[in-house]
Amino acid sequence: MRSVALSFAEARRLVVETVRAAPTPKPVEEVALLEAPGRVLAEPLAADRDLPPVARSIRDGFAVRAADLPGELTLVGEVRAGTVFEGAVQSGQAVEIMTGAPLPVGADAVVMLEHAVREGDRVRIERTVEPGEFINPQGAEARRGDVLLCPGTRLGFAQIALAASIGRTKLRVFRLPTVAILPTGDEIVPVEASPEPYQVRNSNAYSLAVQVARAGGRPQRLDVARDDLDETRRLVESGLQADLLLLSGGVSAGKYDVVERVLSDLGAEFYFDRVLIQPGQPLVFGRVGGVFFFGLPGNPASTMVTFELFARAALELLAGVEEPALSFFRVPLAEDFRHRPGLTRFLPARLSSDGRRLRPIPWRGSSDLPAMARANAWLVADAGREYWRAGEPIEVFLP
Image (cartoon, rainbow, N blue to C red; front, side, top):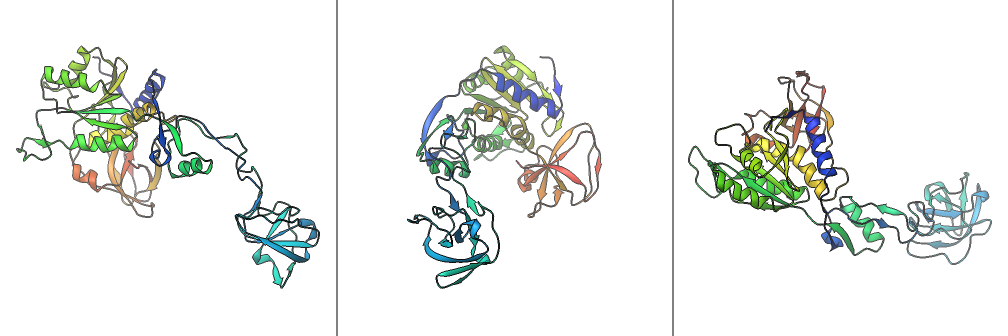
């Protein structure tokens, strides 16, 4: 294949646009409400009644008629959340009211306790109020029938609470996409093995399984594909039965890197095979038939970074997410930082507990798994800039 190298932004955009445009089926299933967190909503959720269903107080205090103030009023009762005041507030009257309680008929404002003086069944208020003060009107949050959540929304605790508040015990969600994880290379041995000095344990399969699950997929770990055309082809064909195929290793230009050859023989369409980032330059993205695949570099840091920046976006789109999120923010550096321009770098770093300082973690390159494990953030070094002084803001990405 012809080598295609893209910038980080170009590659990310191409992945999102290509996967979004593909006519990929997204099966739907119904699950219980407490099984829905982390899933992607496949139906619109509409309000089954006005929210709030009645006007209610947002403070503890006194329900009054604004036209009566300032002045001294007669207390004619009280109303708590979960109850209703049976009468109506007349001129010169007030009702003690608690936060969340329905506003009594006749009242049009609430005065906070701190702004009133109570003496027996009388309450003195020496200030004016506006109609509607400290009241949440009926339907202020939503009207019956309003769509509150749209398909494509990732469901978290707030969304589950909202669904519960409108009486939903089950939700229709998109089925979790199956993601095949195929490590490649003669040097890889099982995690429980005692490796020779020239061998490495199969850590990438485990990190990718965790990343896939966090992103909303169902990981399927395959056997390691050795540097053999027939074996690699058999395992790649198996992986292409999934919704997305992730290959780890075997995508560089080495003599025994057979993955691209196998994919080419299977009729793969390649979109790019290199991205101008570190770690993770030799990244392959393509499709065989209707199944997208990523050839991720084999070094652990490269595998982690390229999944989060590119493969995760494809997975989220396949899972039904409308807009895959990738947010950077800026934090001052705790020390000077320098890198060689030309590549966008995603390097291990520690974000302080208050989120106000970022300190780069010394690392030895893409195989430095201990450095990656110590990091809680990735410093993002712009390809066009060489040097940042301590205290200057720099971009940060939280994996």
